[in-house]
Length: 195
Image (cartoon, rainbow, N blue to C red; front, side, top):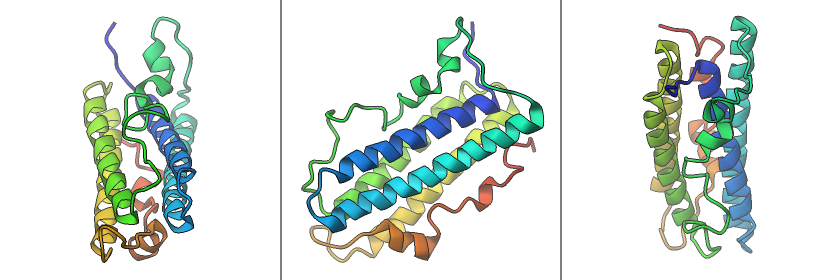
């Protein structure tokens, strides 16, 4: 059986990726005694949680429009469990795995890592596109890639404003105000329609 994802499946996977990313950021925040650095991770977690909610909203709207619902298929465990696919992203690693923050990173390093992880998610979505069922699914994945690329651009702008990579200040809340991190203008109710 070929592995193929519908728009509903793709949105469920994106929702789970964002959930794992937010959870990663919250766990990372706990490693920092410094409230400013901890706050960077809290803001990143909030940003990811907003994206999770946006993907969930789109999935619900798509389901209402088409009547498609996620159903468990015992013959296709991967398609029936978006956690499996999302676990392949850079946020799928366990809390004690290599690549986890130590609690000693500077704010510049934290933002730099957030950029790397957003780039990794975009690469993950590019790979997922190979398993898209139809043009609508591929179009939705393109929207997801565009959103991650927008994250990268916003985080780079934030990183550029950090004075010192060793001791500079980087707060995603500042970038949110300056660059509208978390806005979903491109993810309106028609984002899942075919073009």
